[in-house]
Image 1 (spheres, rainbow, N blue to C red):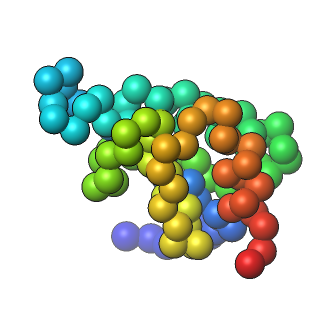
Image 2 (cartoon, rainbow, N blue to C red; image 1 turned 135 degrees about the vertical axis):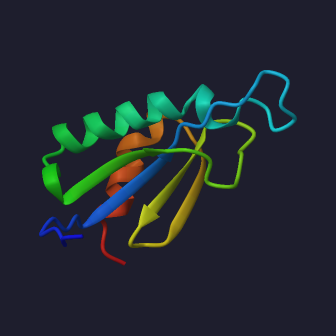
Length: 99
């Protein structure tokens, strides 16, 4: 194992988990997660955040919102739910805003 020098300021983990149509937890984040993931990637690139922000697609994060998807924000240790594509700029702004 070798340690990397890469250190993002923020990492956004976007749930893109797809569930079976008959799953009692509904479609999971798979219905909107991929669109949120793409919108966050575009927001990072167009906003000049570049290598400071990493956007990573994940499987289930353990909470299935009724709509939208789940996004975990690190190192803030925040878990957002019901995130939709239009929320991407606001999610990125909030993640980069110092507390």
